[in-house]
Image 1 (cartoon, helix red, strand yellow):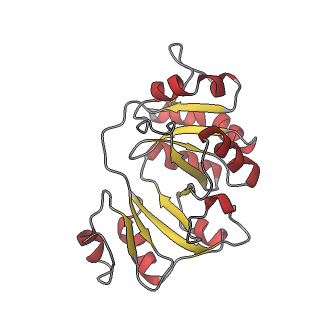
Image 2 (cartoon, helix red, strand yellow):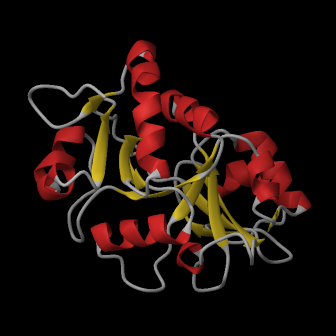
Image 3 (cartoon, helix red, strand yellow):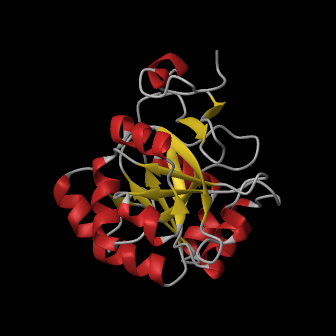
Length: 225
C-alpha cells in the first residue's frame, strides 16, 4: 500500500485512490489492526467485529468500560446476520434516512456481538454511512466494522488525517494503525442517535437530523423536543 511522503497516511480521496487502498486496508482489518478513515462527520477508528480486534481498539483508544463503539454497515442485511432486531419503526427510519448520519441502537445479537459494542442498556449502535469511499470499503470487505471518533480523550475529533498522525505516531510506526487520508472534512454535527430497543423510538443524542424530521416518519418518537 503506497503512503504519502509528507505523512504516514494512505491516499483515500479519489475513486482511483480508494480502489488502490482496498486490498491492503481489508488485509489490515483481517489481521486485527485498527483502521482510521473518513466518515460523513469526522475521522473514525475501526476494526473487525471479533473480540481480539475490538480489544485492540480498546487499547488504542484507552476506552473506559461501559462506553461502547458503534457498527458501520453498508447493507441492512448485515443487521440480520448479526441477529440484531430491527423493529418496524426502526425499519421505517432506516428506509427514510439511511445511508445517512442516523445511528440506531438495536437489541439482539447476543451470540454475535462483542460485549464491548453494547451500551449500558444492552443495545448495539448501527449506522449506514453515506461516505462513498467508506461504502466502497465496506462493500468489498463484506462485513460491518466498528467505529469511534479518532481522537485522544479531551481532544476534539480529527477532521484531517494529519491530526491522527500527530496524535498516534507510535501506533502507526508499529503497524497497529493504518490511516486512510480522505482530505479535510467539512464541519458537521454528529449523527442523531435513536434508541430502538423499546416499544417507542427515543432520541438519546441530538444531531444532524432533528426530532421533527424523524417524527414525519415515526410520530410517536420520544425526546429532543
